[in-house]
Length: 103
Image 1: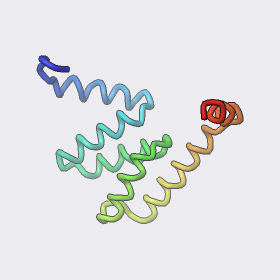
Image 2: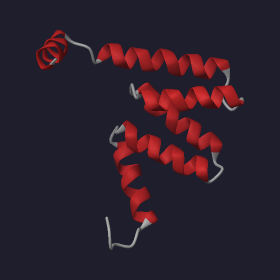
Image 3: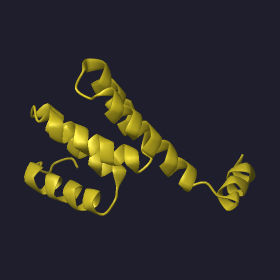
């Protein structure tokens, strides 16, 4: 917030807690932090986990890593399959009816 000193240590702690709890956006935030600090392998692992949870932004970052040569074709393909499986798993007739009702 405004007027408050930023506490990076506390921020990372809560991102880690959320990531452990299965929050894919927190996992991506940790990946960006690791990438910024040149820990590329750790960043990729975070993005793969987030992609496995069905988070499309993480899949996009894995694709970028693949294009840069930091991720193998097999790793990218596995992440893509896991991402699609997670998305398919979350589909249900009730969710589709709700989406149609809102639109």
